[in-house]
Image 1 (cartoon, rainbow, N blue to C red):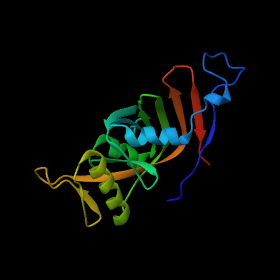
Image 2: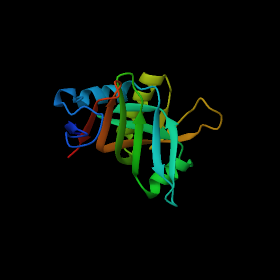
Image 3: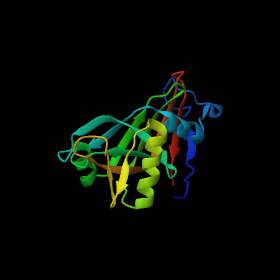
Length: 173
């Protein structure tokens, strides 16, 4: 996967009535945002239900193939939501940067990609997931549950500094 470097810009301008900084020196780099995504112990995924209502849930997030990835059970509400509408939002609280990443989630099915994501889960969380016959399983649980791996392709992201006064928007081409 080719790394897409987003354009960073201030979220608010001088003409906006806002307490946020309009000093371009306060822009956060995408590397800072990526580090926040890579290190977070937990993220929140927001999806859209078939009737249009929002659905939010916590999940584990890893960075693999230069993108945020997560795993969910195929029969879950969020899995059904993403099957009908791939648009989603990931939110991540951080010590120096809070993030909101808007994009589309796509389910992975390539065995090599599945294995890289499984390896990322093992490295970050110590969670042993097994890739077998194009699917992902947890052999350590009764019934050997199946999981799906998803990758988020960001469309835009927003970062808010811990000072409460700085905000950056990243737009992806």
